[in-house]
Amino acid sequence: MAYVQFYNHGYEYFNEKDDPLFSSDSTHSLLFQYAAEDLSCLPGLLHQYISQKMDLTTFEPKDTSDSSGLEQITKTLRSIHPYYEHEYKKTVIKAVGDYFYHLLTHAAFSNKKDICTARNAEWYYKRITGLLPSSWFTEDDFYQTYKTWAAKPEQASDEPEKQLRRQLPDTAAAFSEVINTQYHVYNMLFFLLDISANDLNTLTTAQRIWLFDRIFHESSGQMCIHTADRLSFQPTAQGRGHRPENGCGTANIFKPLHSLNGLNLRRDGIPPELAAYFHTAVEYAKQITSPNAYETYKINSLRQLLDLEILSMIQTGTMIRKCNSCGKYFVVSSRRTAYCNRVNASGVSCSAVGSKQSFQRKLENDEALRIYNRAYKTHHARIRSGKMKENHFSLWRMEAKEMLERVRAGELELGDFKKWVKY
Image (cartoon, rainbow, N blue to C red):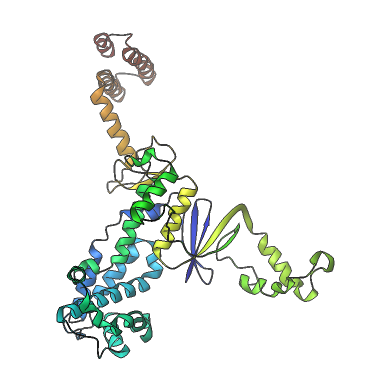
């Protein structure tokens, strides 16, 4: 079990021990990078790995100790989002279990008979431990999840032909939850926050939420977000995971003080036996550094975490759009901003590329600017060659800009401007 705490425009993700695992700030860079990740390799990697470890027809484990496929899967997952850096095991277990179930279902449909008659918990455990390290789960964990279907395989033969086709063992069933989560998040960003989304950008936030919900959830217009249980709403403390100097956790500090409930402390004061605990608690409270509030939630999946992050962006009026250069989302403070500050492989930022492209477009549509730009380069070259002094160049540039504006205003002929800048 893990928790997320939202404050201002970001959040902090931490475990049950109150240790911070990762955080996100107002740029939401982790979210946008996740939305742009290519997950198309995951289904193929999982299918290939299971095929290497188990016969997909007989479901008998193969005699191989090669786990490089599993290592590649976990490495890929952990590169997608920091959430998977800490939760990759349960994600892989779910993906392997779902795909194994999918293969069993297909076998039952294809053979038109009960293939699970002799399949008990030991049978399942032997095959799953052939696919995953046994230290990742207990024998009962997997079997309890899938025994409901295994106990009623006769229902499979009654399914319509359309249902049978849907159960074919293709790679679309592999990591479907992970891939569908990304689709869901990307759709939320586009429908609810993207200020450059065609047609949607004319709607109010409430209208966009209503539209999104109607399209994706077919509900009555109430926003359907997979949020977790909210645990608290408190002032922001300095540093999740901080411990007082005496080394005990906050639970050890405040648990004895729970007995103060029901006492009139103003009249009776703090009982002597609790004075030390109370003093430590007061010192801890002094570490509150902001009057802002945070909300703490239990988190069970990446989808819950990202749903909450997007919800917080809606509530704070965050604007995002796709960069006109790299095509990835970024936070904007103005609707006029079209390029992000990401740096490409050549070491040039999108904003620099965009400025250059924007200037080139201006040159294409502005003859007077093209004339000025050519003359500027010529005069600037004279400085480097020693034929012109910098103060003379500065005076020329100021006058040239004034004359450029006169041409644009229609006060000066283009031909006269062209003759003047060449002197």
